[in-house]
Picture (spheres, rainbow, N blue to C red):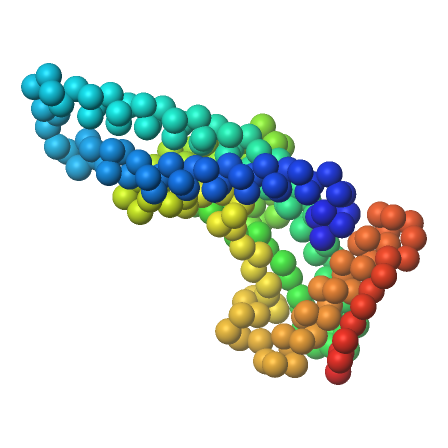
Amino acid sequence: LLVARQPRWTGVRADYDRIVKQRNALLKSAAPVLRRGNRGARRPSRPEHEPAEDARASALHTLDVWNSHLAQVGSQLLYARLRILRDLAPHVAHAYEEVSDGAGDARLRYQASLHEEAAARLAEGEVPEVTELTELLLESLEQVRAGEIERGVGMVGPHRDEIVLSLGNLPAKGYASHGESWSFALGLKLAAYRLLRHDLDADPVLILDDVF
């Protein structure tokens, strides 16, 4: 929906996907090197161990560089997602009310992979500026550094985020009936259509199959 609304985000998303792929490749391939020193092991003093320490320092520096890239590009994507979710939410609530004949309150909430305090702010609908989101991503990456090194995979960033769909105070996943789930899906489609219609000042093409 973000790309349909503003096609330029195709490039941003492609850049972000590339960064995530290369950063994960570093975490996976350099995991044994990066783990040295993370378990409280005493640094060997013999000269023959110096190359291993140099390799670890180099890998950590490279990881820091990729963290910076991920935060810079990821913050742009995160900002755009938060804004479009804020714009979409009232359309979803209205569309679901129409489809269900007023039988529920459809809500959207962004579940970020950032540290707990920052994630709570975004879940409440706050949309920080890109510069602040960059800092929040860097802080969160630093907090999970040991876990990422241990697992060999990235744990923070828009690629790890979710959108939580709720009916009232309960998440639709696991609680919504079959009919409510279909109504929610239809409400999302109608809401996206109306948002694009407002932005484009024209009628987009809306295709629905076997709605009932």
